[in-house]
Image (tube, rainbow, N blue to C red; front, side, top):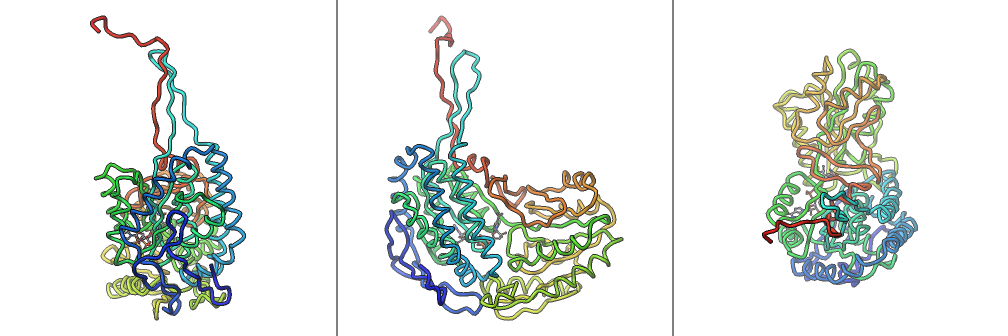
Length: 491
Ligand code: NAD
């Protein structure tokens, strides 16, 4: 629960088999705005994970055996409890995650819809009836997998955690969640409070928290334990690769949503006022710490100067500072390690000849909104996901050049194209190598019922709508022979 005066939570323990249980040790969870102590969090062990997995295994038959509408009712109840406690989530996301009030409010509203759309999935978990060469009655049935491990990131602890497990529950699986060590409350134990209040049967949903030091061993148990049938992971490409490789070795399903280096392409016929506003949001919303953040703005040469004037004027107005002041649209980066990493990317670019049109300054865990030009592919920032309030702007001449610049990355999450000519934009949309492309909007878009996911190093699998059922169910082929199958006479 949250103390409303200080936004500090009372940590009751990890949530295993419907009980709040301590770990042998705790770790410090800091408020990144000032590095003050936010909470002491249980530092779980592989043994704690095993207990949670056993509880999830024991709860599976009854949960999977519920009538589908009963699972839907639980998911709707979760949404109802979540809505009632939205202000607690906003406070936690601001203090623990370093987000602006508006970002927390957006996330709080979105999460309830994740559960409502998952409840609708309970009614859509359909199989197929197939034709048979032997006149059998043949079915492809969708069945739940069993226990699913969910590993979530810190940047959108509400949306990305709920998205990671809501469809899994809808399909009849049971869950062990390990939230990020940077948001173990908002992205983990807070969900346990909500699901407990919603009356979820014990063992169906478990939360194990741990520190970055413990995550190697805890993560291995979450993946390798033979009871676990699939892993739902959102996070960095480096960790996602490691998890997908381990899942491959153990022949387990993995849905991995990873990083991005997303471009916005602004064509000469774009509405430049709209483009400047959209680029400002796409680049700097939540300090650029969104997998879909606009990291490269590609602008057609003839409108480059006009666009830059409008864009820089908007970006310069964004205030950065402690999240308790609602005027600060940009808060801190999530921790000191991330702030130093982003600063190093800026410094590398400046040392190799880039120009900071605005920004470039960093202090404590804060980095000012920064716009870099004269960037080239020798600079780390050209290739690396920045995950900070930094955007590079690059001019281009032709559509072909814009497409090539967009595709010059190992990532492929989203692209944005600004043009008044929808046919032209669609032609380009078909050639950019991303899982998602938005015409006349910026890159950060998601809705609970869409097939969300990337290509290339941005991930494998899709979250959202009926597509998430592919990640969290197995298809079984079942036949009823009605005398049509003949065997060779020798038998
Ligand atoms: P991260 O990969 O460092 O951590 C993600 C999760 O993995 C955390 O819970 C962490 O504790 C866990 N983890 C770390 N090492 C592990 C291991 N060895 N075994 C098991 N689990 C382990 O990522 P992050 O810093 O939390 O998040 C930022 C990254 O996530 C960015 O790259 C961002 O682009 C990406 N992201 C992607 C999406 C998407 O939908 N594509 C959404 C949000 C964030």
